[in-house]
Amino acid sequence: MRDLELSHLIGKSRLLRREGKTYAEIRAVIGEVGDDTLRLWLRGIPRPPETNRTGRAKPELRRKSRQLRAQGLTITEIAEITGASKGSISPWIRDRGIPARVEELRREHLQRLRRRGADARHNQAMQRTATSVAAAEREIGQLSDRELLIVGAALTASASTRVRTWMNSSDGGPLSSARET
Image (cartoon, rainbow, N blue to C red):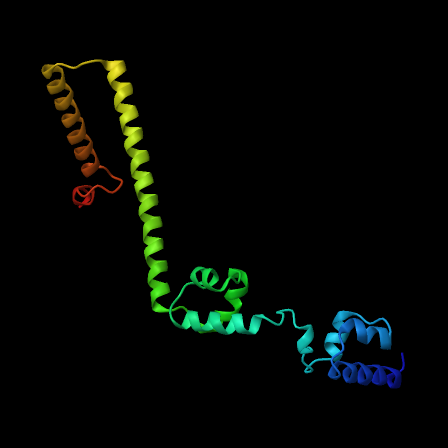
């Protein structure tokens, strides 16, 4: 395509767009051209209002949504009041920021989720402990006071031996460096 023809097509497509024509209507006049090419040629010329994807009833909904957000309502609350979808409301109010009330609701919700997770982990640990204790009781049976005393003494001796061994060990016990000097 020669430069003169190209300039003519670009000029014609820009004129048609200013007259409010859609991409399809422009193509019908100038011939087959891709969307990317038209977008490049028509840069700076706004889309005709009647072809706007938001429809005719939405500007009022958008305005109402922005007012409600300014009052501190959540997107869900705005959707319930206006009947618009949360997906539509979100971009309409994005530049409004997050009101303090909504931020506080988010913070409380996250704390509840964290507590719920911590409680679930605690309950799981308690269940594992109860299962282990029940298995041990089944396997060992009932212990007498004398048997408990012997087991306790053995565990205490074992623990103190481990501590003494560690304190004197060459791999980092607190007395190992004192012994080397």
